[in-house]
Image (cartoon, rainbow, N blue to C red; front, side, top):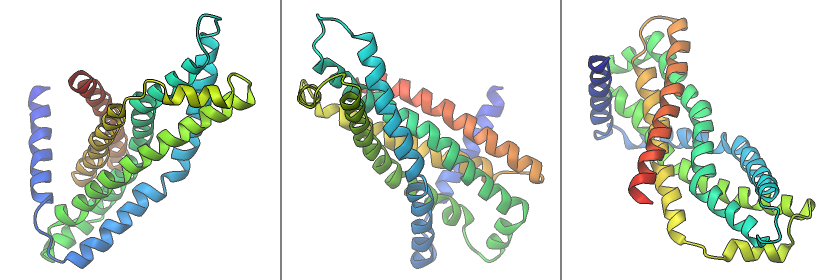
Length: 247
């Protein structure tokens, strides 16, 4: 078990080392980078918006349900929604969803290229395939995923506001009071730090499993599933580690 883990860790480290070398043609790599930004960021936008909206709405209703008491001021509901969304729900839940959406796509795409010998053909042409195929995906994820998380935070809070208005849980003034009460800007820094860390995991781990596929179509599916599972586990480990270190 330990030997297998160290073997994967060594191959993963070598892939990153070779992947972040100097590109042969900046223009070609820029086109690939922009395509990955579109795949990872723009195409993931609808699912991120839908999940974020309902996360905020559900969190507001359930928080109000648990805190119904004359002793608890209503603005506390908005305060809990704000902090829960920024610290945990948006960064972690959205990135786990992206690990399934984006990670499976990256692993299956690279796995198909490996099985169909497209990667071998690129290497014969003298192209550093790890730089051309892996680096743009990681860089695109490091840029687009934090942007999606910041947008998710805003949409979740707005969803909580809508739920509070429509269900008469609290008024507009009470919600705004709760949003501004005892706000710590450091929480946003923590959320963005988690987003960068999770983005690296979402892009690099599926790229490793897809790049090293051996076999046929069946192995592509297995590697895609394994990449998503490992990415989710690593995201949860990183979530706990960052919480211990930074909070």
